[in-house]
Structure formats: structure tokens, C-alpha cells
Length: 133
Image (cartoon, rainbow, N blue to C red; front, side, top):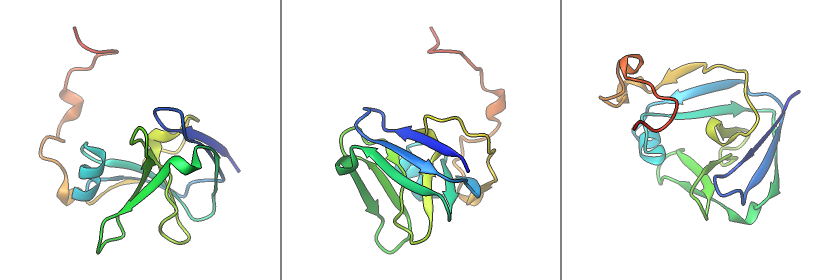
């Protein structure tokens, strides 16, 4: 069993996940594009891991899109995506909120039929170690 630690951008919320992730999906659905502001969400899923809030639990809020199972938990202060337990029996952890390195690689791209039109051939785009000058 592995312990993972994470936090929000402003540092108000700190948490720990005890256990392992069964899957890691890169979701390209339109809902995930909207709530991440990016081409896809990168979420880890577990049916057995346990979530503990170490600090800032009162700063965590959630939004569920009416008529769907699409949910996002986030810090009220900085807006950072945080783990969600809104779907019974399932822990969903945005990979980017973890401070502990993960060894699991993405399991699959999902909802790829909704993929952003600009999310193609990204390996050909120039790469910089920092902000380009």
C-alpha cells in the first residue's frame, strides 16, 4: 500500500491518500475540458484507497453538473482541483494535485471523440524548460 500526499495551489488544503490507484484516465469529454480549461483532465481512480484531509477541509467545495455524474471538488480560495468522493465507492484524484510522485502511467484516453481540435501532434510543438523569451 502506498501513501500519497497532495495540496492545493495556495497551500490551504493538504491531504493524504492511503492505498493504490486502479486506473488513471485522461478524459477528453467536453465537461473535463471546461472544468480544467485544457485539452483533458488527468484523474486517478480508486475503489479502495482512503482519503484524509490534513488541513483546510473547510476550504474544499464541490460542484456536480446537474443531470450528470460529472463532479469537481476544488479549493474555495485558489480554485485548485482536489480529490472527490462524490460518486459512492469511488475516489477520484486529479493527478496534478499530488505532491508525491506517481509511478502509474495513464491507463487510457477516454471520450476521445470529444478531443479538442488543437490537441493533435503535440510532440511536434517546440519545448522549453521554462517560459520562452
